[in-house]
Length: 117
Image (cartoon, rainbow, N blue to C red; front, side, top):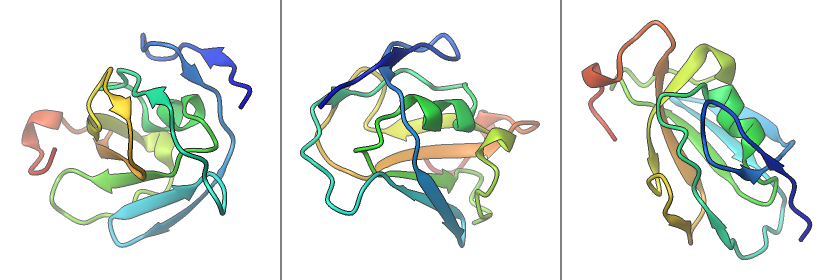
């Protein structure tokens, strides 16, 4: 698998990606491929960064889910309007399972008000 590196939001290097997204009740799920390969990557530290930037930074082979961390169950449509409060796995941990989960709030909100991380 050929990987290109990029740095965004002061985060560590990670593969660059392009994939499609769908949104539903509080969650925007992104599929990298119909048959994802086993993951051998490290989760970048994107906490506090823009969800759209994190999406672009991840590998297209990795399934991603963006969840509203406010507890309001809002759909995460335009990832550029959201910021990351937490992730699973956490920053700098090996990605051993998918989907990778990003817990997000609207850009104008604070992460300290979140109910799930």
